[in-house]
Each structure stands twice: as structure tokens, then as C-alpha cells.
Image 1: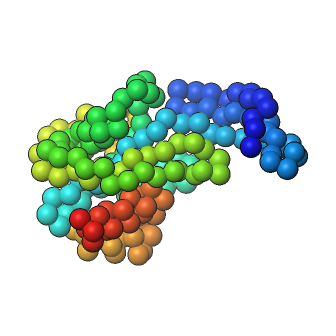
Image 2 (image 1 turned 90 degrees about the vertical axis):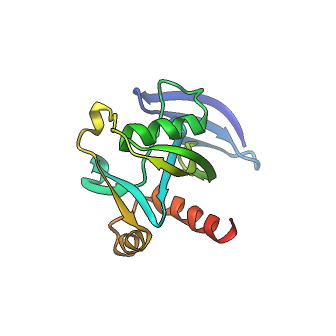
Length: 177
């Protein structure tokens, strides 16, 4: 597919939307609307048989959601993924990981966005104080056993796609080492 032109339709500090005119392989033309957001890091903090989750209000779905800590760095597009993971873990939970292991990469919504996430397993955890951003002041965090998390996934209490996919990568890592 060939991009013929690109036009920015909307932008703010966290995202932009562009409209691309394209030519497909068969010669027909079309349009794609693309949401551009910085890549993110998602962290699965593991301590024995427990994982640490955060809960916050998610405006687009008008509900509070439990999920793994995650975030972007719009102000630092060149930040290394592991450094971003360490920063987000500390900011959202106050936890510091002695080890971070990359479990895999997730495409958020490849039909409409180029945003990618890197999933890290955080171990050798040391507790500290959260350093949340102003927009995260309503965030809560807590430890859950893996059995509790399995139940939360079954019941829909944890339902954001990134956390569900990250947990699948974690379980696969557990099986294959």
C-alpha cells in the first residue's frame, strides 16, 4: 500500500489523529484514519504468587478498572522501554523492581493505531512511595494472588485488552521459562 498524502486532523499532548490517502495494490484509492500515540510500557509486578494492580477511573468507558500499571512518556519519545517501565512502575505504585524481563510486544489496535506496548515482568520488588501524576490522583493499587486475578478476569472485573493480553504472555512465560 502506498501513502499518497497525510493530513493531521487533531492533536493534543497525548495523541494525534491523521488522515492518510492511500493507493492499494490493485490501484484503487482509499483513506485511513490513524490514531498516533506514544508507545507504552506495561508492567506485571510479581512477588511470589501475587501481582500488583492499579485501579482508576477510565473516562471513555465511564467506569473504574483494575489493570496492570502502564504508561507512556509523550515528553520523552526516545526513552528506552525498560526505563519507561521502571518509571511507570515507581510512579503508579511506588514499587521498584530489581529485575525487569521483557515478555513481549502488543499492538494496541493495529486497524486504527500504530501504538505498541512492551510488556515487562517485574521481580525482586522493593516497596516505596507512589509518585503519581496529577491525573492519576484517584488511582488505587493493591496486591492480588494469581488465583484472585484469574477470578477477576473470569468475572470481567479485569477486562482491559492490554492487561488480558499481557497476562497471557505472562502465563506463556511461566510454562516455557
